[in-house]
Amino acid sequence: MRKPVTVLDILAKKGKEPVVMVTSYDATMARIVDEADVDIILVGDSAGMVMAGLENTLGVSMDMMVYHTLCVTRVKPKALVVADMPFLSYQAGVHDAVVNAGRLIQEGCAQAVKVEGGMRVIDQVRAIVKADIPVMGHLGLTPQSVHAFGGYKVQGRSEAAAQRLKEDALALEDAGVFSIVLECVPTSLAEEVTRSLVVPTIGIGAGPACDGQVLVIQDLLGMSKEFKPKFVKRYAELFDSIKDAVTTYAREVRSRAFPSEEHCFKG
Image 1 (tube, rainbow, N blue to C red):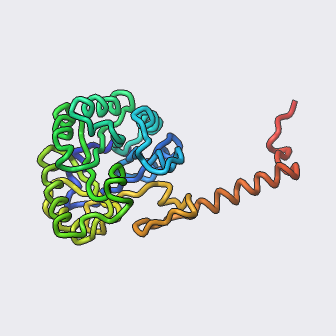
Image 2: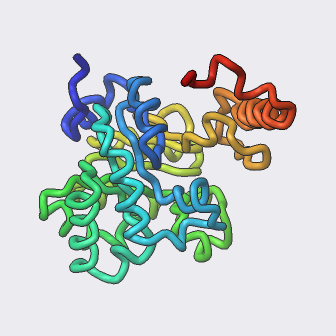
């Protein structure tokens, strides 16, 4: 029997075995990815884009995150379930941060939360950790800062920006995070940050030197024809497969080939 993955298990992988993390937002996908033996299921605020059709993650609410997290945890996956704290659920201050993190644990049944940002949210991170809620950090391209960044751009390319990211990573580690996502940063910077930390780094568009990798499950499965970022490898092309299946279903319904006798009940 596979044992449930814990925060301590993730910490223990540092320097020994890469951490495998994928996103999931519903029970069906959570069952599938957990059968694939991933280490962490991230219930990302990317749900707003891939599930709700939003332009970015800024419109995602706490209620949405609690709902999607509970959809995942209801299937009782063995993977560690980490839930994103959405925009404005923690930026306003320590009290909001702890209360909202608590909602994801109490109502969503997550085992940990993820917070975007470094020094500017360090007090919130410390307070959440002090409340015995494990925290995963997130640096580099933090999607909730898309307007401040002027778009979805690689971060840490200048010397000053790279230095800030390194300082943020060390500050997060000192505040008690058990891991840090590095998104869209130069490979050399990600490698340097990874070497400097005791906690594992999990990369997305940050190169192979990170202690693990994460992808959005819809990207990994090729479920969009248009969205093809450089850092994504498609392990399937399900957009076409699903479209072909539904097209065949529609054709058979219209021709009355479905349902056939084998799909019917006898009186």
